[in-house]
Length: 170
Image (cartoon, rainbow, N blue to C red; front, side, top):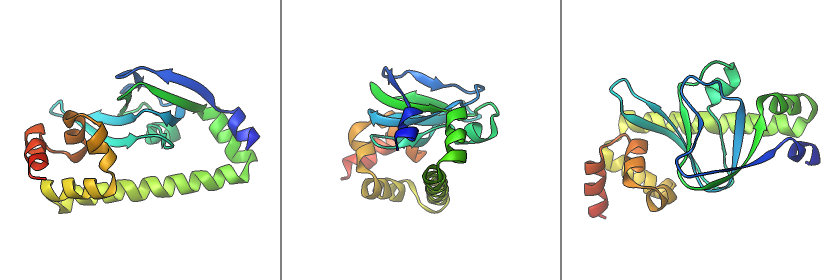
């Protein structure tokens, strides 16, 4: 554990600060101590679409870029003043070579990311806005409680107006 922790560095970021921008290669994986990170992209019609929200005790990175070392199609933004620990790409992969428990953690992280992304995709294809909102309240009500409607709407892939109507019905 000491070896793993020695590879992480602290970072304090301000609300709305961008940690990764579209076109930049993701060189870090972040662990949220306090606050919230959002991973999002811009659609062809210029709208923001939120893919992932990381609150306390969660990891976040532009995973495709981090793995492939290619430019990111995503942005990572702090939605609140946020305290982070981060590990560089180089140190992350070095730990994979020398610490078996880190490799096990990484496999678990990738499996969870796959399941979460698949479930989100399926919800967009099989559920209407009301059902997606209800599912969000069941699975992660913190998102609705802590974040502005604009962000929640981009996470659910609905308009702010529809979100306001759904919230007023509850």
